[in-house]
Every structure is written in C-alpha cells, then in structure tokens.
Length: 327
Image 1: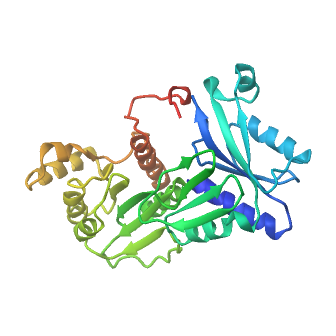
Image 2: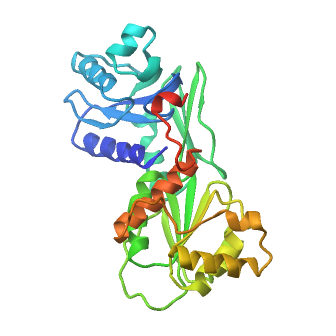
Image 3: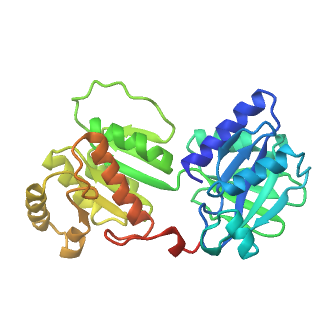
C-alpha cells in the first residue's frame, strides 16, 4: 500500500460521515502490463466521487457508470475482470494487452476499514484479510512486512510503512525530502545531534526525530534492504560517521550531499577505515540524479528520483517503459 491508497481510506471516512454509500475496488490480479500494482485501491460513490485509481482512467469511468446505473456487489464482494480480449483491452486503455482483475465491495462496518486506517495513522504494519465468500474483513498487526495474497476465497492486502529512510541532518533540505517521501510510503527517521535548530516541526506518525550520534543510530536500527540512508548535514564529522556504518549495512541506497570535489575527499577518508573498495563504491555522491538541481526542493526531488529508480530496480541511464515491465 502506498501513500495514495492511504488517502483513499481518508476519503472513504469523509464521504461516509456525509452519508454517502461507498464502494471500494482493489486490484487483485494483473496479467501482462498494468498501470497500477496489486493492492492498489479506488473508492467511488453513486454521486460520482472518486479517490485513488486502478488504471489509467477508462476503467474508472466504466466503474462509475456501473455504480451510477445501480450496480452494487451486495454482501459478497464482486470480481470484475477487464481486458480479456484485445478489443476490450484497447477500449479500456490497458497498456500492451494487459488484463486486470478487481475485487469490488460495498464499504460497511464489516469492511474494517476504520481499523485499517487507524493502524496506518499510528504507523503500524498490518494486513487486511477479506473473505470473498462473506464480505467479512479482519485487520491484524504483523511484525514484518507481509506479502499481498489473492485466492478464490481470500484477498489479503498488507499495509503500513514497508520502506524506510534514515536522514542525517534536519535542515531545510530534509523538510522538503520528508514532504515528498511520505506519499511514497516511507517511514522516516531524522537524526541530528546538533542543537542549532529552533524550527517547530509538524508531527507525523511516520516521522521520528532523534539526537543520537549517527553511527550509533544506524547500528541500532540495523538497516535492511528496504532502507535508504542519506547524509545531508554538510558536516564531514557527522556525515562520515553515518556513512561508515551505512556502507557496511544492507541498505539499498546510501547517499551524501556535497560537490564532486568533496566526495573525492570523502572517499579518501572512508578508505582510511575498514571499508572495502566495493563498500565505498556503493556511495551515491553527489547525492541524487544529475538534474541540475540548485534549490532544496529540486535537490530533494533528485534524491527521491534516484532512490525510486534503485527501489524499482532501474539503473541510471536505463529507460524502462511501463509496457516493458510485466506485473
């Protein structure tokens, strides 16, 4: 589940508070290429209100027309498939012959969406399991990120922060990075032991702050393959402390701000410790894709663009079209 789908749950709660009937469509299965991954959600009402998406737009229009015409799944969720033929795939705008299977359900207290929404707001990992025979859902917490699952009798959708960013430094650039990263589904840990910031920060369930020393924090958090680490203090002592542990970790992304000249000096310093050439080569510095970024928002965008490419298995310079990626 990504940040967009969390917004769908907020929209459902708002619409129901206004007395609207709401239907929820979830991408359950795809064949070939698909514009949205399994687990993606869309909410809609008979009045034509929509939140989220399951495709590029044509399927949303068809579902809205069905609902406006009186379609309701009833207590038992309805399975709707699009793109079974080439003509149908073309009509609904599915790319490259993709086929899409949706589970459509009426939202009721049995849907347990309020429990799911509360758990997400609290930053907890969990799973919503929907019984496709009865429409009864069950929400429960998990200790580790769970996998999406779909069978003829059950739809299991994981939720909560599956990805994490550890940011060293709490300046203006970090604030822009946080605002852009939250909708991408990241849990964010901000580390800055310096007492130089008087800025009042917004509180968010998926953002935590600490004044630990950076190396101690990284050792304690034990970064895994779903973790990115970026050093943004411009202070070599703090940034290097973080990098010495980050480059030895399993983090999928390690980056540091600074010019090419500063990065060369940094690599020389890191080589004086126990880091191998391979470990030092993992460092992305200067951090971010080379977009010509100058302002803090542009630099934050470049960092997240590079991070997203690696998260999706794309190396810089390799262009991947949606039609080339099988779902």
